[in-house]
Length: 451
Ligand code: TYD
Ligand code: MG
Image (cartoon, rainbow, N blue to C red; front, side, top):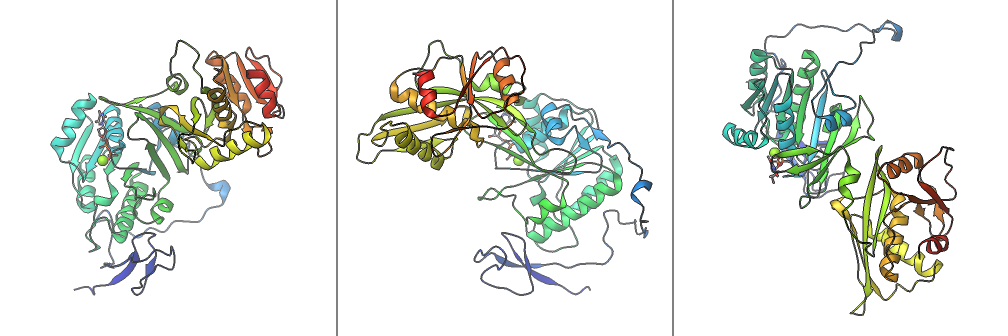
């Protein structure tokens, strides 16, 4: 019998230690180090019979043939966009996201829509549960096979029989391999099963999509090393109480990480949102005070987002400041700028800020829209509906330039806005825009234009 080998792993960061300690020296977390049995055997391969020792030859760079990356188009444009044009053959994609956000739904839906043969392996749900879900999604793909299995060796055996074009695993935390005795979901199991899957993907040239759970802190559960091992890391995020979901690439060896996909969760699955700006701006008949529209960019995609503010006299001693979808510290900073540089008395007022659609915006170009929404509510004067904003506000009340301004202008124009307020310092390539560009340099200028 092989000697039982064990090692100690931090369950938080995945660092390995020869002996137990109370505190992880790598991530400084307490009580996260756990002993795991790693009984290794020499002959370990995804294919039990494959023991041929092949040694690769080193080549000069010009000798290497540049095969055009073979991509599988997934029939889901938003996913294709985020992946950089489709699933690359032999690549391993990790999809992370909070529980209940829709990871299984997204992948099952894609599997059901694909023309290629897909093997969907679930360790979390039974076949009948998956059938029920598939009935909701109304997809029928005779090429989509469902397997409930958690042992990697059995999955590989099935793969050898049916030879699918794409393998989907839901989720990596439920898998276990025979060669390691630690329980499923532990650091060493996750690491080994992922390594086996990657080896399998590279040797058979089959793309593998893995679902990964997320910890409280928002990182993919399991070692950080997992993110280093795979080719693509996708993050599925959104507010569970809202219907919009954003698919982002955190790492992509075959494309840009600036792209993002937008979906809407419906009772029949996830709908692709191809024109996000139109959905995010609410319809209204009359001009309302306290709302403004910002021309923002999420990654590479321009998005017109509605900012809503409410300013009212504080009933209690300490005024309240609350913000949804926008950084509260930044809101406080903008309020201080308005107080000090533009002379608005907001110190004794409650200020509430909300970004419509449940989105979380980090683009600084939304600053000016935030300021204008606050002023509009404070002065009780509505901002005309044909106005939008794209500029950052600095500490001295100056209106600063933003990046990719051209893209923002085009999006605003496309949606029928007639005036966009920008920084004077933004260099705009001379082009005839139908939309009127209003250039300002200080908050006072904006106030003059609007109120
Ligand atoms: P799920 O894919 O199970 O989440 P995850 O795998 O990320 O944990 O998503 C479950 C949620 O999605 C659940 O709250 C119900 C909702 N849902 C819909 O709104 N419409 C649908 O068609 C489906 C299948 C699920
Ligand atoms: Mg799931």
